[in-house]
Each structure stands twice: as structure tokens, then as C-alpha cells.
Length: 231
Ligand SMILES: Nc1ncnc2c1ncn2[C@@H]1O[C@H](COP(=O)(O)OP(=O)(O)OP(=O)(O)O)[C@@H](O)[C@H]1O
Image 1: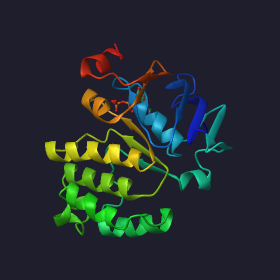
Image 2: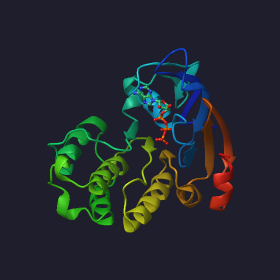
Image 3: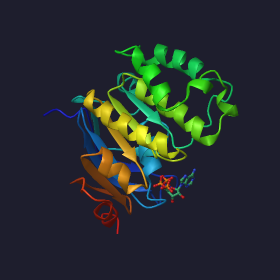
Image 4: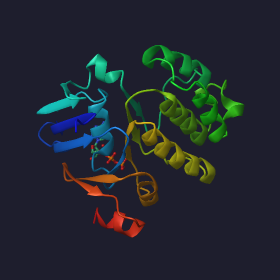
């Protein structure tokens, strides 16, 4: 089966003599959510940033989007992936409504127009859609970032610690959104420190440690077994 995305031999660094990532290879398939585990500082964010053209210092042996060679900055790849940061402080004067208009131009419109309204309702964000991001609480800012991510028609969603800052209800709704995105045919790669987010949402896991990515492993059914993967 053709993978929607594959990368081999990714290496990334801040100091070239001490690379954060020395050999990262992974595949993502349409219609699956995949987890990315690693202790604090393992390099998960650096990896996602490198894959999404947000980190300059990297090299790789090969990268493919739907079987075609690409780079993180290839326009055809960029238009089919969305990267949601852990803690996004960009566009402080923009609201969700403004941001969505921008994303509609960049990614094209949603196949189901009602998806955006469903997401705003599900994340209980209706009262904030015209509030500037800079005036939102951390959790509400995160909800805006996740609504923006899940409403795009991009083939691949890269979600860096999507659970962070969310309240209980929003966390539950996030899990629903990840599963629903996979059911719609998108590929989702999410990093997290919450084992439950993997057992609830993913089918496969990769573990980042000492610059190397191991896996994929079938996602275990219980949280202790997930945590054991990084011991
Ligand atoms: N701007 C930077 N300059 C230099 N080193 C950095 C920079 N950002 C991150 N690092 C280092 O790169 C390594 C990987 O950091 P990264 O943020 O990718 O890890 P992470 O797995 O996402 O961590 P966490 O789970 O704590 O978010 C760490 O040793 C970190 O100190």
C-alpha cells in the first residue's frame, strides 16, 4: 500500500555536532492516527518542526508524499499537511473567524461546510470566535488552534501535544476529533505525555529516544503498557 507520507533517515540539530535527531524514519497511512512518545527533551517538537518546514537545520535520505519525492517546503506537500503547535502565540490580533478565512485561501474549503460549526460547538468555543487570539486563555487559544487544524481538508495533521491546556470536556472532544479525522481518511500524527490519548485514539506508536525513532508498535490497550514503552 502506498503510504500517504514517509520519511527516512531524518537528522536534525541546533548544534550540528550534537544532533537532536540522528535517524528518524516513519510512515503514515491515510485513515490512521499514530502516536509519538518520548520523554521531555527527546526531540518530538524538533522532529515535527523539521517535517513541517519550521526548523532549518535538518537533512534526510528520503521523504515522500503519496509516493512522490518531496521536501518539507514542497508546496504540494505543504498544502496537504497542517501543523498544530503545542503553544501557538502567532497572529495575536486575529480571531478564529479571521484565521479560518486565511486557511480557506491556503488549504481550500472543507468538504463538509458544517464541520467548522460542529467543532466550534464541540469545543464550546462559540463565545470566542471573534475574540483576538491574544486575549484568549491558554486553553481557549489551544481550542482555536485545534478547531483550525481539524477543519482543514489537509491529508495529514501533525499535532504537537494537543491535550495540553484543555479542560476535561475539551479533552474528551479532542479524542473524538482525532478518531473522526482518521475515519474521514486523514492521517494524524500526535505527540503527547498522556498515555490515555494514545490508547483512546491511535493504532500505532513510535518512540523517540536518544535521537532514534523506534517502532511502529501496535498501541497497547492500557496506559501502563504505553508508559512502559519509554522506560
Ligand atoms: N531553540 C533551541 N536551541 C537549542 N536547543 C534547543 C532549542 N529548542 C530545543 N532545544 C533542545 O532540543 C532538544 C529537543 O527538544 P524538543 O523541544 O524537540 O523536545 P520534546 O521531545 O518536544 O520535549 P517536551 O516533551 O519537553 O516538549 C532538547 O534537548 C532541547 O533542549
